Image (cartoon, rainbow over all chains, first blue to last red; front, side, top):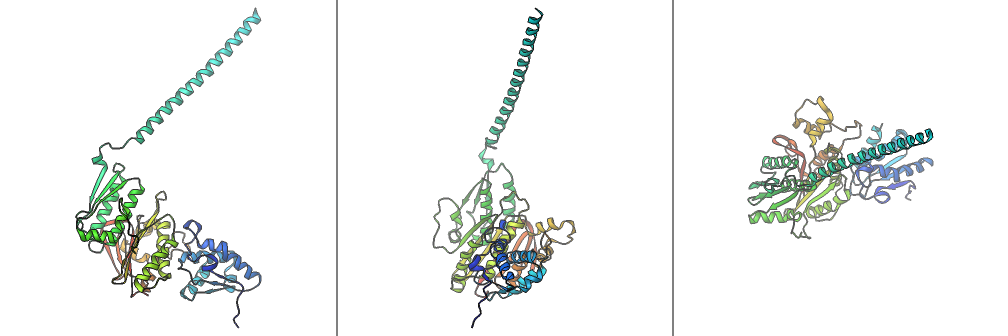
Length: 110
Length: 339
């Protein structure tokens, strides 16, 4: 039986199929907007129930490094590196490199 | 009597004060009028044509027989460089590009020239073009959709070629989606996405908007063009901005600490040596992503021209150019060998 995680967000459907760049000033659907609108609240909800948040990066048109960096670095700044690493799971079947890339952003965040 | 004199004196004082006030007011209004008149004169001068002689205010730029980035980059850059110098001169209000003798033309040169035409237009100056006499050159110009930007031309709606997509101070990632889908259909026969290419285009747009223009008052524009070669299943991409150029912005950011040539700077910039101006670890990955896309074979024949350096990723060569290009130009192809 497949266990469905109730704490999950899919960027393409929950946010935008065409994610943009870093901050609001850069244009629509930025990493900052994704954090403010989706990621922060979803992570908080998962954390409150001591569960893992699954972030699905598939089915978008593509990402800029700045988009992912901004969203996940903000998460580390607000919740702390260790908590984020313990409570997040990244899915990316289309571009598996993104999983390690996002983890490196989290690890390098100050 | 004494009382009457006293009251008369008071009246006189009041009258004098009133007169004085009146004069003050009159003087003030006079000055104000003078100031107003001066301002009117100034406005009139500003509105008046700066140069009454049209022969001086119009500049004709003759485009040579071969106007191609791949065949003679120096000629293209020298024309662009000299024209940009002329644009800075407020006296010149119209630019005529004479292509009548042009026979060989390529996408790179066309994109740079069109981007320049847009910049001239943005500065409220007129642009006119004299089309090539050579029938083949004329056909090519029609094919790439160059003429649709000028008066009296009806664009071909079925054309796959995206001659120019223009962005103003913002990243338009939604607009690049159909460009990529069309390119994928030409090359692989399927209308599908290419995440790596989309990521690369967002990085290019971000670089242009956030870093290329040091003078923040200028309109931050970038341009993308594509040409579909359906026979050979190949699409050529060009991306250009008329900013300061990569090496110039790195020089400004790093100051005197840089003791290396521009060729070295550009080559190292794509390896991530000069990252972000904010010096945060995670920032400034854009150029690395562009190089990685070439390494992963997402794109082929990637070339960059910025300031006085040409970097050819295919051969790994950096060439010092005689004429600088103020801005950054990228060209690459998407073909069936791409992954």
